[in-house]
Image (cartoon, rainbow, N blue to C red; front, top):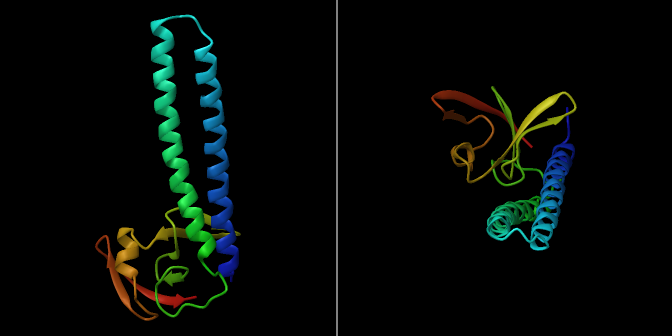
Length: 149
């Protein structure tokens, strides 16, 4: 069986990779905007600069959201046992395995597939506070919680 610490680290690694990609994209767009400022093409320059600024704003918003998610992940104690569904719980159901942290989607740890979901997600809201043995219905399908770590 995989450990909750391994799952937690895989989530941190995936999010850090996304942060690194965004940071790199921001640097490239910033360099492009600076290059356009040195251009003397008139209206074409203004349009390209405005588009670059919009892209920078979009990327910076995404980066801020990822940094917020990383702060949430860092606050989770992967060694603390959980007896009900809460932030930091690793849940096994009859149909899937979930880690309650931030919305990162599918995470592969070894040969296991775990879905990293937030408490604010629809499935997170359905599961919140549930305990081992409880049944839940999500997307019209019933599943039973077989373990919570």
